Image (cartoon, rainbow, N blue to C red; front, side, top):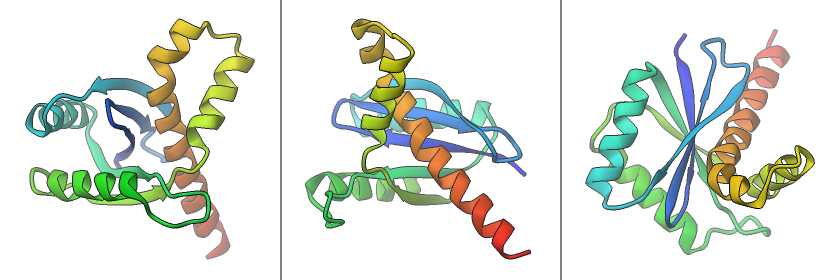
Length: 144
């Protein structure tokens, strides 16, 4: 089994988290400052190939009522463009409240405001990925 990567795609950044090979634990990795798609995708794919990632979990920023707004459209467009430059499977995961959860965890860890700003995106990506990992583990356990 290969590790998975979780992505928190934002207007200015892409937060990246990775799982272990057993797909049990998500860890924050880094944040890419967005420039142009070509530059962003090259940086992302370099990280993914170095880590031997087997698939991507892209946070889908649904509205609180479950509807899709402009941010979802932007995320889906990014996924479409990314699928043109990689064969890695891409799936979406509801990311509602992932940034809130990440912010809360960082506050509880007494992280400075400056440090929170530096790490919030890849910590949010780890919450997205961990939610997905927990779900697939639950589905696997219920199928036994």
